[in-house]
Image (cartoon, rainbow, N blue to C red; front, side, top):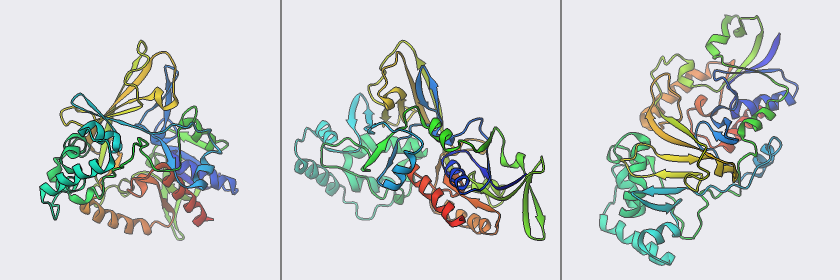
Length: 378
């Protein structure tokens, strides 16, 4: 069998690319090393609740073209992301807004809040921030930093804020309105019935195989025309769309690109109908080992009996772990450029997605990147 594309990864990037190419008459085969489709946005049903298996995912965009595109494959609810921060028994609204400042200081006007923050910043006398701690303090002052930034950031990165470079935090958004909507985007929501169903609809009519890695599946052979890709059954592929780890494709020959990983502990609570009253609660003190607790039923305004919660623990990535967040510091970006130069020599491979491009993407940006790749190919 002759295929136009072997698409490695059944996540959002691979599914969009496969859908569009199929619509244009191309033949594609999609494979994924996991036993399921949908990548990190995979949802599964537990206690009749759609559980976000790899952490909370809220779709949001200001691009109407992208919003119209995803609405072909799913109906979206009107969920608005409004997380809560927990610090030593105190609850604060996120992102930092007038509800946060009123709870923290008892202020009632934007002017009072601005003056409180400006006064704290002025007292610090930081002119050239030397690390992330100084950068954050120079943006939000002492109280917000100590209660809502420091511990959470140190857990997320696994390092003291004084050891992290200042450029990691370019800004910390503060709103001087009583608005708990985390995103500023016009369109926001979660697919009714979960993300897995949405991706299933994208992949409808497309051949998909799960539980197999690219290295176990494909054979690359040097020919006079370049590199030919086939599988063990003798099927051939004109091109490969590779959404796995860029450095892994090259067998880490230049060294490992660094990631932060996550570990999830999911718990079914059949006798509890409402564990925390909100979909996402961030735990910002350093002593609590997890960064947040997710209660999945609130993503879809659930009234089911029982509930399901997930505690999310940041972890240092090791080879074989699931990579989540690229560490885009100077050292890794320099190594990335070397791998990108190698990637340019692979005429038969298109590298895409979060891992293939070593870049953190919101879901709408993943879709847009996939659509642009399709346009370039066509």
